[in-house]
Image 1 (tube, rainbow, N blue to C red):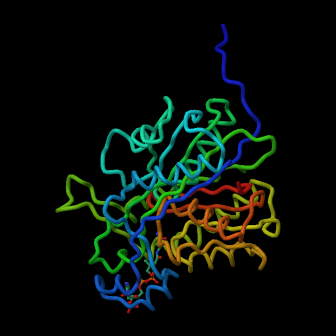
Image 2: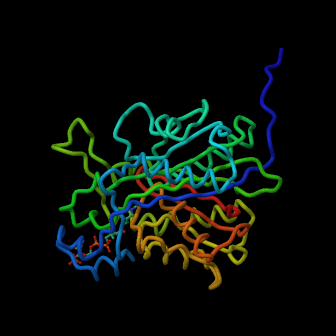
Image 3: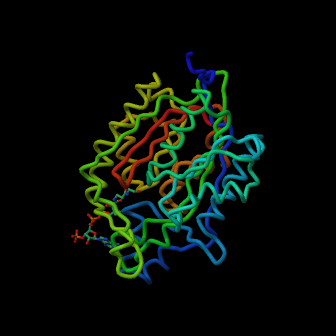
Length: 326
Ligand code: UT7
């Protein structure tokens, strides 16, 4: 007898997005009391003016819950009707249970499939690719995806090569069925030979606390060459020309990387470009949905517009899609 398989759907879309920013504002001036640098150097080299770090009572869990609640509310989907919860994080403090299992309980979900993924700054795009595939294959109707990071806890505040970059936050989205195409093909992959370019210490060998280590220049070069090409591939795979885009929402790693991608893609003037890094820093898996929410809340971008999103980072990994904004 043939096995019965789920009835596939043709299309999926992002139904709603939500974000949560940690509450403590750490300015470049304050940062320069920790590392040998200047506020001007940090702003010129990255575009960051301030970042958010967690305050007492906040964690990657509380931020994930807050972002997820907003995304659910905006999508009009009840937590009980979500079939799958995927959280992308490199900041969870336990090997098991997953952050997704804990957040599912906090959100009052029913019995969803729950799991975490580790795809660093490409985490949101990886999770979106999975959610899109699950919904279209008929294995889930509503998938809640969350990127949540508290990288300040993994930041060596004496390391002038990384301390100024990272911030804490969470971004979430609900993905569900759609009548029209609204999530283009996921262009994703990795650079396994460069797995050691950005790392968080092996906990067995960490002296006191696991910290982030990064070869900044190597990542910068990769992001402005190979990754810029991947952004082009995502456009081509979706059949969207650069001039048809309304918004470009790249991972918020460095404004100079964003500028380089803009040149490479040849995006016309009118395309809105996310620059959330200025006040948020690099929040890894949370950066794309946080930047998306910021553009929608400010009115710079609106629901129904077409956006190119791309994440890239430790692994090294990358993921990109063309989407219709929720
Ligand atoms: O999200 C995951 C992906 N991560 C990224 O995408 C990060 C990618 N990398 C970067 O964004 C950049 O490499 C950084 C922002 C981390 C560093 O900027 P850079 O332009 O690559 O700086 P650099 O390491 O090439 O250093 C340039 C100069 C050096 O001085 P000399 O040798 O030219 O005299 C450094 O010693 O800047 C100096 N420098 C600093 N000066 C003030 C390095 N760090 C600092 C600092 N403050 N914090």
